[in-house]
Amino acid sequence: MIRTVLRTEHVTMQFGGVIAVNDLNIVVKEHEIIALIGPNGAGKTTAFNDITGVYTPTKGRVIYSPAEGKEIDITGRKPSEIAQLGIARTFQNIRLFKDLSVYENVLIAKHLHLESNFLAATFRLPGYKKEEEAMRADVERLLKEVNLWDVRNEKASSLPYGKQRYLEIVRALATEPKLLLLDEPAAGMNPKETAELTEFIRQIRDRFNLTIFMIEHHMDLVMEISDRIYVLDFGTTIATGDPAAIQNNERVIKAYLGEDEDA
Amino acid sequence: MNNKRNIMLTIAALVILFGVACFVQAEVNSYVRRIINLCLVYAIIGLSMNVTNGFAGQFSLGQAGFMAIGAYMVGIFTVPVELRADVFYAVPMNPHLVNVYMPLWMALILGGVLAAFVAGIIGTPVLRLRGDYLAIATLGFSEIIRIVITNATSITNGALGIKNIPPLNDVRYIFMAAAISYVLITLLLNSSYGRAFKAIREDEIAAEAMGISLFYHKNLAFMVSAFFAGIGGGLYGALLGTVDPKNFLFTLTYNFLLIIVLGGMGSVTGSMFGAIIVTAGLEYLRLFDEPMELMGIAIPLFRPGLRMVVFSILLMVCVLFWRRGIMGTNELTWEKIISFVKHPLSGFRKKGVQGK
Image 1 (cartoon, each protein chain N blue to C red):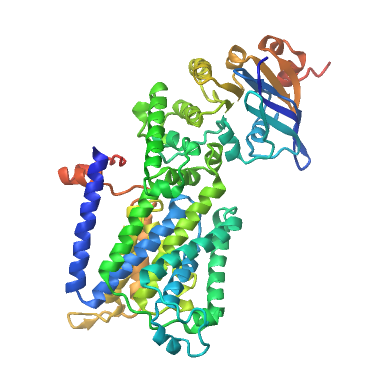
Image 2 (spheres, one colour):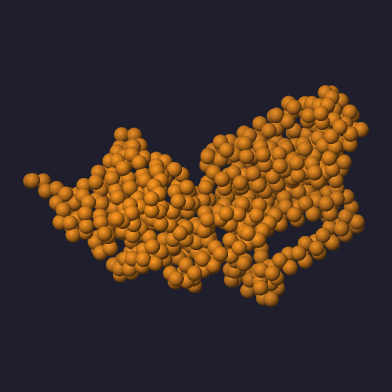
């Protein structure tokens, strides 16, 4: 049986009188690519924030399994702890370390694996030196692999928009995650770029042995790449299934196109 | 390898500067030495403040309080035992402390450690705040430290202050302290921990999503900052020869805020330049405070106070033209110096390459 990497159990997020996410039950299995779609304001990003610890769900639990036979309840843990457990994410509105170089952006993501304490780091003790060298070697390899090595000394904010999106994914990869959450990775991309990104997501999934859970609006990307799709509308899951089933689902079409007034 | 070369150059520069310090100590009059010493002390404290404010991006205004802790450690422990009765004439000194003497370096380190410890206690609740709120909270705590010191009369001699601290107007000693502080802080900031600080400054949410614990790293930056502010405060006390709670009013913090804003928030070398400009600038602008005659006619504006007017105008000009301070978040690296020496003009046109 394939291991379930992430499971949300009845996750509900309420802000005052607004229920942004209502009774969300998602199952993400190992090596799958799962998409979360829905109209604007459906609660997709809120769901992501519940999983990554930015919010603590009002109700329900988030269960994460980093390895076979290991299950951790990550509900309400700090985002940094969750990242250390192996869940990395990107953001809808790119959040790079703007003033730092491409290289530093990725190098920072390696910090969470550092074992030397700050004194060992300050005095450059051999243990720290070894770790630092390993970090730098990893980052070099990663940046070369994704063709960002040539721009490593550029400020992150000076990269073209599309590259910034890639850099954000690479930075997330540098934390060596098991589960990668992508929040609208193709936002603002044209069809050609979207096609490239689709290919890229598939590649990194295989290359880094990842499980991917993403929010996306570009239907070509979603339909081509997803193993399963969850559709949210007003915080409620209105449909689940493989791309073909979702494309023909009445409720999904209604949620996206609106209801016929005569009906 | 460039890295090795830079280390060698830095060591060489430090040795040469130490030689200069020895020369200054032997040849230059005490007034100038005092200004140089004050520059060095302010450079240490400016850099310490830059660790939290410029590198970790947390707007803290508690430096005066941490300085006070360091200065009082020096005051309490380095006054010669036989002179203590004269100092504590109103309320006798606490009997447990009255015979405890420490050499200056030990008192400095103790002051730094105690300041860092207090920072750890304060930081735990306060560093959850952001921006202006953090500034106000740290400002408040710095005042609390001062009030506690004022009222712990049997230890600190209260509002009377502690006199008879063996005066330290030794450029070599203070230069060494400043050099060690700069080297240690630079090493920390260039390590993975320093990068984590910068990540928090750039984007807290993204930093946290990359697995960087905000609580731990903000506290670390705050404590390191307090440690060196304590050392700087101790040297400040030793340089003045007396400590007094009124020296450590929250307005003192603004000097260092000025230094780091002027020098560049997030620049080690910037803090140094800022300290030199602010301290030496204020001192040498004194000529505006003296009456001046031009061709036998006294110029009416030259009177006490004009110095501050001129200084403020210079500051405004500075901030208008260099919005992020002289250095911004850049550093003066050996690469830049070398390329400047090789091509004196092109350095201005082309942006320098980052070190390493």
